[in-house]
Length: 77
Image 1 (cartoon, rainbow, N blue to C red):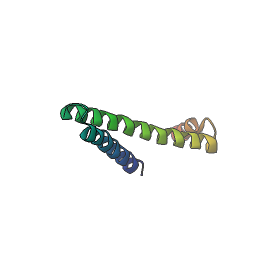
Image 2: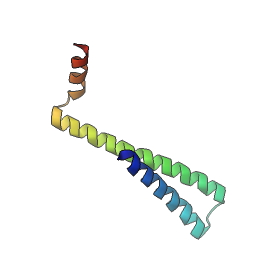
Image 3: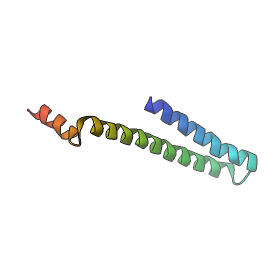
Image 4: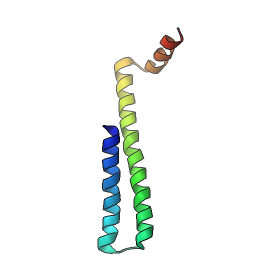
């Protein structure tokens, strides 16, 4: 689900940035395409990071601050 949401956000960001240039004609089309691609990738990684942080906070809330270290101890035993 995270991948689908991230890809949707990236596509909408790209279309939004490129579409603004199409209507307002600010810069060269190749430059805008590169900027739109960079913006969409950056925004996609930010959205993915938000999901990761939210899930980490949820695991800490449910299992305590050391939930990851307890998992490693069970594997080593």
